[in-house]
Image (cartoon, rainbow, N blue to C red):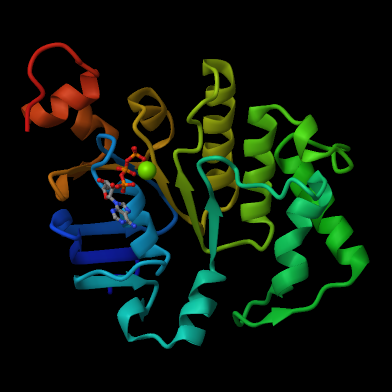
Length: 262
Ligand SMILES: Nc1ncnc2c1ncn2[C@@H]1O[C@H](COP(=O)(O)OP(=O)(O)OP(=O)(O)O)[C@@H](O)[C@H]1O
Ligand SMILES: [Mg+2]
């Protein structure tokens, strides 16, 4: 696989019953960049992300993450690949019974720190404390470690979710609709955080799912649109602004009037 490609999807097909959700998806996700996958609700964006994580298996095709072809991996090897991912869930998915500090510390306690050789190492309490404070500062929540999850606003939750995803310095960062349900100002703040996280960690390969075009244009280096089970267009934000493809144009311009083109 080309050095610059972090994640490579080839001919991914996936059906649930008689519903063909993915019907030959090809996508190269470049290393060290933010790629945003857009598409209508139900177009298969989350299903695609689950293939990348190895949480569901395709009916046909191949998923390569770094040098690993997921379908050839043992269960144990697949687990090790997953440790190289950070995942920011749509609803933040924090543990309500743990405070902010313990939520962020959780992956470190479970898996230790990620060593340069990919092996994990147990961390001392002191090291964990230091790392969590560092992460809190990076998402603008210094001193908030003792707060309970129920005391947080939606935007704060997302930031804690991001800190938790980043705490083990993952190689791959996946976001499923990171700003859904937030107000425009909070959305812009989270988008800035996604962009600054990428810029501060240039080795990370980020894959973001979104159906918000304004957010996409704010953060993306590359954009891919899923439509009818395949990638309809893959290019730069400018390629999306200037495309003549009516299906893509309709999505980009957010036109909800008139017939939906299929
Ligand atoms: N485990 C499953 N079993 C059966 N059908 C599923 C399963 N997961 C997803 N689907 C179906 O696959 C289609 C694509 O779902 P997916 O969640 O990927 O959409 P999406 O593009 O992420 O939409 P949204 O923007 O609303 O999150 C939907 O029709 C959904 O019902
Ligand atoms: Mg989804």
